[in-house]
Picture 1: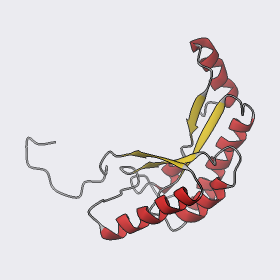
Picture 2: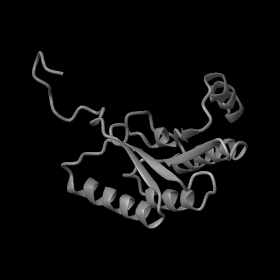
Picture 3: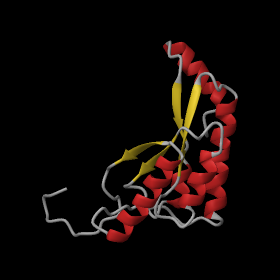
Picture 4: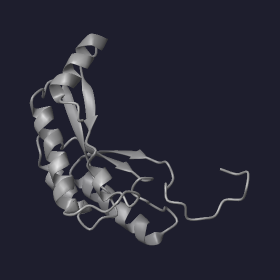
Length: 145
């Protein structure tokens, strides 16, 4: 069950915290490590929109970052859409592991360059969760993890 902005503000107040950064979980719809979803991009948009609507309730307390899988065909469109959103234009958070980003794959690196370039053009901050892919690509030797 999602936590509303009102619930978050109560938690922040109880902890004596004035402001917070909220990260959408929209990237999960584009994760190749989860079962495919119908109308994936529609769901990514809806999740980013829900996050924006929640943030709009407390614009002096909450800031938000847009999220999406940077390898998806809709990545640049969603970044551009979020850049025009008053609540999400602050930045993006990318999760390389859950997006199956492979930094040894030249095609993936090129797609990331495009996303980074677009974020820079929109003056959006970028946060990257660098954990490696959660999809095994190489068999591990016994005793190694």
